[in-house]
Length: 264
Picture 1: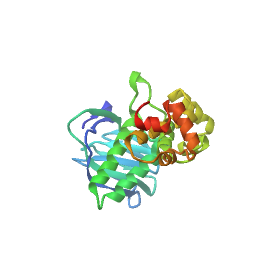
Picture 2 (picture 1 turned 90 degrees about the vertical axis):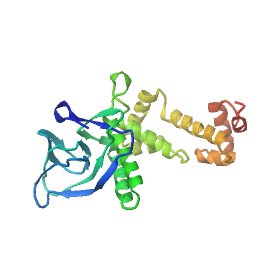
Picture 3 (picture 1 turned 180 degrees about the vertical axis):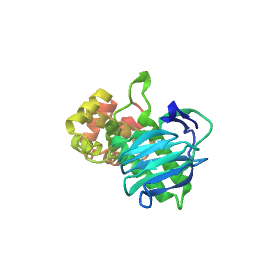
């Protein structure tokens, strides 16, 4: 749980959900433009909606809307606000054992900001009645925060954040009549940029990726459920049974009945 690299990074364990001591919406900068304090035993996770300055154990960090910080226990923090300042926060304990991940103290969440905001708001809403649900939501937040800085194998950067948003939108809407512009809008990028991202990340087109994921879902439902074939076709966004049959033969190599029977 110690800070590294002169206070610019921390090492965290995420092998189990955190224990949440407190979370909510913090409002600062109204009574005083400065706060100075420590949390001796708790980590601090903040998702910011304003501009300010933060110093963690003497190391300066700029706060901007969409930035997220993770401060280790015992660190002396100094906030310098520029007026009323509102952020989502969580004070928590992290596992002391298991694999450690190195994460910057301050990061720009970029296009992941709406996802992190939604998850943290869900945690805030769940906390009064279901602490386990709140901890689970924050566990997801922490993994996403760690992924912002995690390089892929070979030392290259991970998938573009907009690509991750696009994939999440596709996976959440396989039953819908998705179009490439729909997915681009959800990812916050242009149609052409989305096409380039998918070619770079998957080697294929958005339409081909969507078709592949629909038929993988269909294969699972055909083999593992008792849902009717028309219901499965609808569940993967192909309402026409003839079109579904053709898609199965093209992508899975057999008719829906043959896939269900396990003969393909």
